[in-house]
Length: 488
View 1 (tube, rainbow, N blue to C red):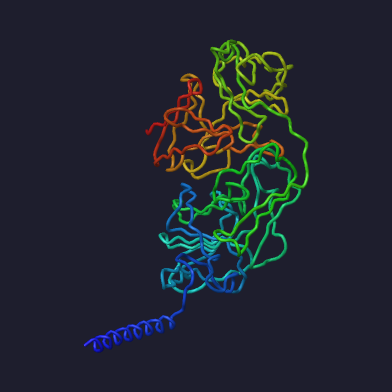
View 2: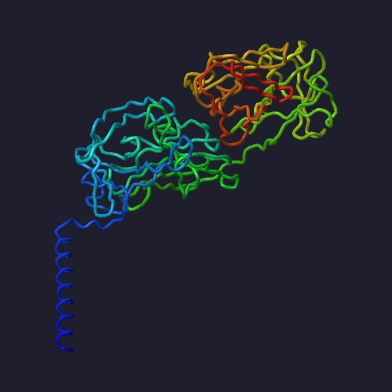
C-alpha cells in the first residue's frame, strides 16, 4: 500500500514537471521583453536599436496648468535622417507600435509663444515607423487621449532672463550645436556670456510651449527651469545670486545614457565682472500734489519693473496744484526730486527740487529710471493683451487700450472679449528702447483678483483670472486700488 502511494505521487510530480517544461518551451518561442511597462523610442535612427530603459519616454506635463498629464509622454532624442524609429508601448508581454497615420508638416512661425520650427504633427495608428529628413536633436511627444504625436526639431537652445544682458529675449544668447551630429550625445554651448544677479530659463527655438490641439488645452513645455543641475520642464526661473555673477560658458547636453528626458545643463564660470550699482528695492511717492507731506498719511508705493532693478512706475492721481518727491523708504532719507526744467517730452533730470504736478487734476503715469537718473510724467497707457484680445501678444495691442475717465476716477474699457486669461499691463515710451534689455509687457503687468488690482512687480506668474467669451466692462481705480470685471 505504501509502495503504491509513493509511485502515484512520483507520477504526479513527473507530470507537473512535464507541464512546466512545456510552458517554458512555449515562452521561448515568443520575443522576450526585458524592460518595464511604458512607452519607448527604439530603432536604427536612434541610439537604441533594441528596447532600453534609457529609451523610455517620460511622463508629460501639460504646460496649461503645469500638472502631470497621465496620457502624455515625451522625450528628447537624437535622430539620424533616412533611418527609421518606432514609438512602442510595452504592456506586460505586449509590444504595441504606434506609427504615423495622418501626419504633416506644421510651421509654427513662433506663433502663440511656440518655437520657430517646422514640426511633424498628426495622428497615429497601430504599426509603422517614422523617419526624419534632417539629422539632429528632436523633441518627441505623444498623447494617447488626443491620439496625437509631434516630432519637433531642436535647432538651438536659448538662455534668457533678467540675468542676461538682453533680458527675456534670446536672439543674441543662443546655444549652438557643438561639433557634429551624434546619436549618443549632443551638446549646445555659448561662451563668454555675462550673467548678473537675477533669474533665467532655457528654451529651444525661441519658444515656451508647443500646442498639441487647436483648442490650446494641451501644450508641451519647450523650456526648462528649476535648477541648472536639475532641469524641470516649465519649472520656476533659475536664480543667480550676486556672489555668482561673472562670465560663463553655458552648456545644454543631451545624452542617450541619461534617463528621463535625457537633458542636462552646466554652467562654468570663466571670468569675473565689476559689481553693478545697487538700487533700492522699493520706492515711494509723497507730496501735496499727490497726497500730503506726512509719511503717516500718504502711502504711495511705486511698482518695480520686473528684471530692471533701476526702474519703477506708478499710475497716480495728481491734484491741480502742489508737488511731490520720492524716497526708497517711507522716511526722509535718500529722498529726491527733480533738477532743472521739464524737457519737451515731459522728462525731468533727477535732483533735489520738488516735482510740480502738471496743473490739471487726473491720472498720470510716473516712471523713474534710476540708472539714467530720469523722471517721466506722461499720459496713462493701459492695455489688454493675449487670449481675450484675439490671442495678440505683441505689445501694445492698440485695440485693447483702456480709456482714462477722470470724471469717474477710473481707467476703463468696455469690449467684446474672447474666452481666456485676462491679462493687462501698462505701457510707456521708455519700455521698448531700454538697451540692451527692453521692458516686456509682462514686466509691467497686473490683474484684478477679488476686486483688487494686484501688481506683478518682481514676482512670478500671478494667479490667473479666466473669462468666458462675452462683452465686459473693466474698471480700474488706481486711487483706491479697486478693480471690477462686469459682464454687459
